[in-house]
Image 1: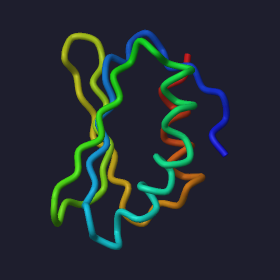
Image 2 (image 1 turned 135 degrees about the vertical axis):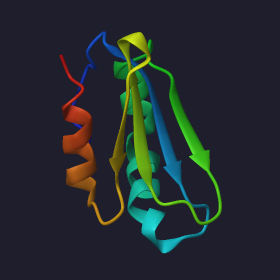
Image 3 (image 1 turned 90 degrees about the horizontal axis):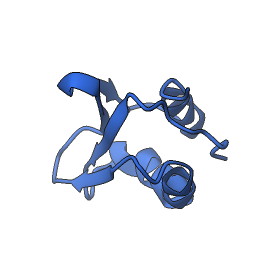
Length: 91
């Protein structure tokens, strides 16, 4: 599923926020279960953080150079859409 993507050097950290038991986070959990190791092996320099909390809407926070951050809402996104969001960080 996850195509080989190498992130730009501007990407300093990715944080995935999801609900431990909420149905809105099921797709993100599936994506991470299937693709976490591939993402990490292709981008060993980028910290990948997974944060679980009750009732949290699924989201991705990307931290870039100079402390700039962007938030991407993942609620209602399918596996391909999540993959496409990660492709935007590629070189």
